[in-house]
Amino acid sequence: MSAPYLQRTPRINTNDDQVQLVAWRVAPGDYVEAGEEMADVETTKAVVAVEAERSGYLSPLVAVGEIVAVGAPLAWIADSADAVLSVPAAEPAASVAEPALSPPPAPSITPAAGGISLSLQVPAAAAAPTAELGSSRLSPAAQRRAQELGLSGDQLAGRGLLTLRDIEALASPAPLVAAKPAAGPSPSGGQPLSLAKRAEAAALQLGAAGGIVSHLTVQFPSSGIRRRLEREGLFDGQPLPLILYELARLLGQWPQLNAWCDGERVYPHPELRIGLALDLGQGLKVVQLPGLERQLPAQIHAQVQEAAQRYLDQRLRPEELEGSSFSVTDLSSLDVLQFRPLINGRQSAILGIGGDSQAPGWPMSLTLAFDHRCSNGREVGLFLQALRERLLAYAEPEPVAAPAADTGASLAAALRGLAGCDLCGIPREAYYRDFGRYAFLHAYVRPDGSLGAACHRCTSGTA
Image (cartoon, rainbow, N blue to C red; front, side, top):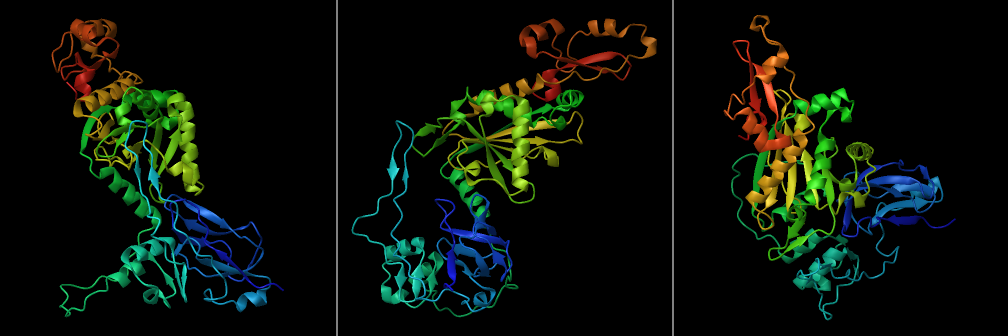
């Protein structure tokens, strides 16, 4: 009978040095086949299943909710049910030899041609501390930090597994101070932030770092668009596929919105990669939707539906959650009309979509948060105006109520007799001449029973 096998925590994302255990799929003491999914772990990107590397009886070493370093012990796998009962609750200091961990390759940022190349170099003389010091083991990040702080092997020895937080505590021990009376009840319990939530916060902090962020908003009535979609049986009556379709086509004309700035130069992204923010009860994920500029609205709708289903099934791959160059977030289903979205890292803009189904005309809003270093208010205003006009082109005319029976004129004659917009006063002929194919007079019944009209600028609030 062979000795129990120690399975370690695998590296799933290149940049993640730790993961959080979400669930065990195999109960302690149960048999697991090699290649069978035995646990779920959460990285900064997604929840991923971990497969058993050998067949045998499982003895977990990590509790659900615990954050564990990559390479740290995850579970024992023994040949027999009796053997699994005798395995240690933790890895013995000398039971498994670990190779010394060398520092990872120096990270580098290589911007587009013409940009500034930033690289982080580790001096050749600065060798990383060994991975094992007596009964102590250090994660790669802890090794690097211990070296930077000049901690000796004597200070680190005999302390078990040391994390980055442990190294910081050893270097800066808390000073002894007299106890002060508490101002109120001390907090207890609390819930630690998940790795995904920490990564989300880091991405938003990166997007705001050094940037001068402004917001511009336009509104439009969406009832005519929704009425047409429902009549034609499209997209469950939701305008999102149309918005993504027209957005992707327009962004090709505004490359400054598909870019990022490092504080000195603006780097256009080589291709458009729109990321859609999804939060269906399992945390916020920005899912990349590739190739929207080459797809029709029906294809975009199918892609969004498929991404949402993979989100609910926790089948999103890490590569789907990184690398987007422009983000979209939609709160219109929650009847949130106005909000200020936050720009993600290495992006210069994000589009927020709002709506209010309880207001007349079902108004929707398009809010663009943008980095002033890459664009300006005039450009963004023109962009939003163009996007709104494209969307209004899909709208059906508002239904016209029949005139009162005592008017003595037919509906057709009454429509031909409309002189222009009642609200701004622009004559009918001048309106159609100035706005061409975008011109649209909305007819309505005045309090006296006669027909009146309002132009599209007045009904959308842009006059």
